[in-house]
Structures are given as C-alpha cells and as structure tokens.
Length: 174
Length: 173
Image (cartoon, rainbow over all chains, first blue to last red):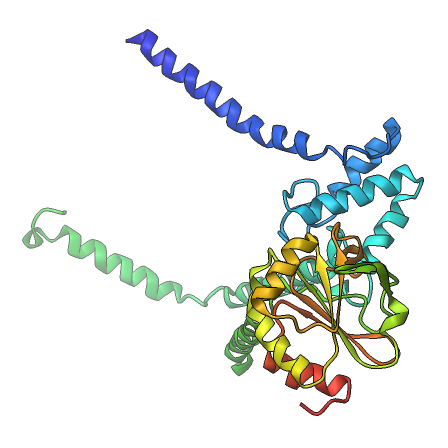
C-alpha cells in the first residue's frame, strides 16, 4: 500500500519534471542559429541571448522571438545573430528592426510622444485613486463628529429599563 | 453633491467608449513605420525569367501596388479575385512571391489567376524583411515618386480600395 503510493508519487514527480523541462528543451533547439551562421564570442552570445528575449514576434504577438516557433521569428533571430557577428551594437540592431517593424517589436518601447501614456498611465491611475481615497477618508471623518448627548435623558432612560427588568410580572430574564 | 453621482457615471461612459474603440482596433495590424518613406531598395529576380531583375527604381513614375503573396497562403486565394478585377481596370500590381518556390507559385497562379504585371521571387523572405512584412498577403501602395503611401495587412478588398487606396493615388474608384 505504502509502496504503491510512493510509486505513484515518484512517477508524478518525474512526469512534472519532464513537463517543466519541456520548454527548456524546445528553447535550446530554437536558439540554434542557422547552420552556416558565423561563430559568436562569449560576450556576443550573451548579447544575442539578451536581445532575442527583448524582441517581440509580430506573428504571435505575446511571444519573444526567442520563444516563438514561427518562421519569421527564426528569420529575425538569424538577422540579430548575423548583425551581432558583424560587429553591430545592440542599439544598431534594434534600430534595424524598428525601422522596418516599428516600436512594436520592442518589448520595452522608448519613452516618446506616442508612448508616454503607456509608460506613465498606470502611475496616473494610481495617483487619481489616491486622491479619491484621501478625499473620501476626509469626508467620512468630518461626518463622524460627536453627537450632542442629553445626559439627563440618557440616565432616565437607563433607570426606566432597569425598573422594568425588576418587575416580577415580566417573567424570567431571557 | 450632484457631482458625486455624475462623475462615476461619466467615467464609466468614457471607459465604455474607450473599450468600444479598442475592440474595433485589430492588434494584429501593426502600423508600418515605412509609410511616407521611399520603398526599400531591393533587387529580385523576375519569376520565370532568371536573367531579369527588378529594382525599386523600376517602380517609379506611376502608382504601383506591391503585393506580397505565396502559394502557401490561404488568405491570398481570397484576395486574388479582387486583384484580378483591379488589374482589369488597369491598376498595376507587382507581385512578390514570398518564401515560396517558383514551381509552387506558377502552379498556384495557374489555378487562381495572375493579376500581376510583374512577379519577382523572394524565396528567403529577405526583401520581405526589409519591407517589414510579417505575413501574407500584405500590399504596399506606392505613389508615382516611389513613396509608400499605404499598407494593407491581410486581403485587399473593395472597401479598402474605395475608401483608402484609390483616393491616395488619385484614381477614381
């Protein structure tokens, strides 16, 4: 019984591990540049790996060109690879792509006239929410000003309650 | 006091309008940075005539439609009927056979019709890369100066032609 349970767990663990490793194996295959591509130095390879994870695939728009299986993504990876091998800087490679596909290829678009709202929008919304919250809290505090209490009336009321509780006709207290 | 109720209502209406506008916007249509710029340089072999090449300079002097198509592209079949109509009206369409083989393209053209004045082959999609193509069909509209004035992503249809393209190149639809 115990052994069987362990066996199941073991298979489950191995299975999950394989599923977890699957994306890595796919990615490893994918990162391979074209067979006739030039060799990169370690530093260039590092830059290549960083860059392809910052560029968007235009066909499947929620993937980087590093993750995408589409042939256009492979073309773009080869392009990035070739240009880095040719000694171009990261900025030059990005320029090459934005000249053709626009800022949309960059997962981190530059801050400019057409993108400022994208960058500061969330902070603007947060600011508005804070202002609303502060105003609301202040309005509530004003409403909670102490109410004037007639002390004598209160005492009379409590005494009256107590007297009624002592009345035997009322039955046992609940 | 009235503002307390009007403001959220106004905000809600504003959001609804914003989202409604967003729904009409197709995120798959990435605006091209090439619009307003001269057509990218290229030099491609003419399909079926390996000794002849076509360059960007050959496209100057009159409005031209540059249509990226392929035999593997299903949406291109949809578009082909309309391109045939345009060609019959005298519109010059240059075809770029994108990531395709010449044999496949010729077979496909025989079946679906050939609206092109000239066809060039871009087997590796390298010219496509320079033109910012990320799928087929895509159609670029060039004015007489060789400047890209419009890009159609996906099949070209009568609506796009009448409302956008024809007025841009001074043709009465």
